[in-house]
Length: 289
Image (cartoon, rainbow, N blue to C red; front, side, top):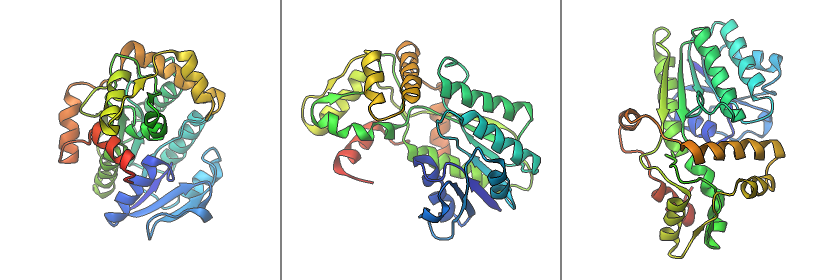
């Protein structure tokens, strides 16, 4: 049993690796800088660019299970299809793919459509995979601590409602799915699982959570998408800022809520209640890792 984890140094990938290593799995971490990798003991770093077929082929040698996590980049689609095609050609029959909630409907948001295209490849070639569709990560809000401390919640979430989910809950579900597939005697049926937290937040209600935790007034920045795009562009490339602007526009119009059954499914998969946004915010303020 050897599991390759792509996106190994990101928030989700690194958390998945920690859980797999703790369970005693043989894990390979795919990273561009293997000599700098500092993961759990026993995890083997394999290096290369995800868009380089030769590097991917080398990383897949001897692997039977793959966690497919492609970061949001201009060539995300190429990276995802390259990995899955080479893994399929290598005869691998166990996959977990990290997609996104509403991938099938937010067709005007580039990174959503990319992920749904990869989902379609998985379906068309009947790859035995667990497709995870998580909602907006709570951890996306961790960098907002300083702004909130100065009295502003700056993420333009709108008023339709976003069911945020904690990255640690995503990692728990992903690692369990990988281990279940890796330990199975043969390929398991394909499945799609929506992952969303227990509460829906608007820009106003998220600001109130920060206000309650900080014990001071925190104002919601508002729904101005021009302002939101400009603010994101201060810390991200222009293409990414525009992509996220389009995502926020869909949040304003449609929100981001999973099907009602998803709440019970998540509790069952976790074996406990999912983490709540208010607790996450308190951890951020208190400096809890």
